[in-house]
Length: 399
Image 1 (cartoon, rainbow, N blue to C red):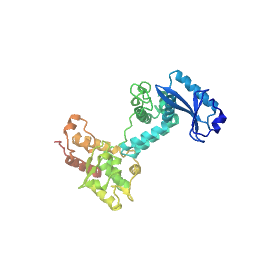
Image 2: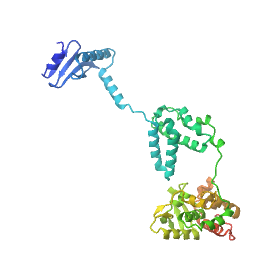
Image 3: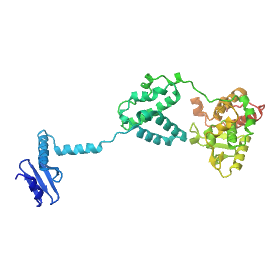
C-alpha cells in the first residue's frame, strides 16, 4: 500500500504498515505511539532505523529521510551507524577551556605545596593583573607566542623581576595544559630555546637588589633604641636579630617548639625544607618569658590576643627607628660580623643561618648540626648586640 498522512493519523491497530513508495513503513505501537521506520540490510544483518514520530516528522519529510539513507547505503555507508557516531561526537565534544578558568584551577592545585599563603597571592596577582586582560577569555588552545609577548613585552624592562616570575608561572600553567592535552604543540611561554631567542635575558637588564643591611657596628646603638619601644613587634624584631632568623620563621613560631632553650623549627616552615634547631641565648629566653606573660594563653611565640603577628609588624617597628635596613638584611649583618670580627669557621656561620653546605661532598658526610659551636657563636653575637663588644671571642673548631 501507499501510505497517506490521513491513514497514519487515523490508524490505531498496532502493527507495521509498509509504504511501497519509499521502502519505509509506519510502526504503530499504540494509538499515540507511531513512528516512521526504514528497514534495511547491512553486513548481513537487518536493521531498523527510526525516521521520527509522525507527531514531529510529516510523511513527505520521512520519505525524503528514507531516500537519503538509501543513497548512503548505495555508497556503502550504514546510515544508522553514521547517526550514532554523529550523536556521540556531539555529546563528547567539550566546550573550549578558557585560560582564566584553567589558570585558577592550576593555582589552586599548586597551592597545596606552598608553605605560605603569600605565594598563592603573588601567583594570583600577577596572573590576574597582567595575563587575564590579554588572554583571560581566550580558549587555551588558541593562545600562541604572540599573545605571551603581548603580556610580557610592556613590563619586561620596566618590571623585569615581576615579568620574569610571571613568565615562569605562565610556562608552568601551559605545561599543565600540554600534559592534559588541552593544547598541542610547543609551550608558548617556554623560555629555553623559545622566548630566550626573543626577549633579553632578565639578569642582563635588571640589577639584583639585595636586602638593605645595617653595618654591624651600628647594631648595639639600634638595640638600645629598640629596647625603649614597648611592643610585641619590637621584642619579635630583637629576637629575630639575635637568632639571625627569617621573618616567617619567627612570626609562625610556636611555644611548643621551644624545649630546654632550643627552638626547633619544623621543616615545613623552613625555606630549605629541613628542620632547624636554634640554640637560644639568655636574652632570647628572657624575651620569650616576657611575651608569655603578656599573652599567656597564646600558642605563638609572639602574638596579640592569641593572634600571630603580621608579616609587616617587625618592619613597622624597624621604621620607628628611622633606619633604611630591612628585617631580612640583619642576616647579612650577622654574617658580616662573623666574618670580620670572629675566627668562626664559615660552616658554623652558614649552619646558624640554616644555609645548606655548598660543598656537596662535605654535605653528604656531615650529619650533625654543630649545635654546641653555634650556641657559643650566638652567645657572642648577643654580647656584641647588647654591649658593642665581644672580648671573649674565641676560635671555634669544626670537628
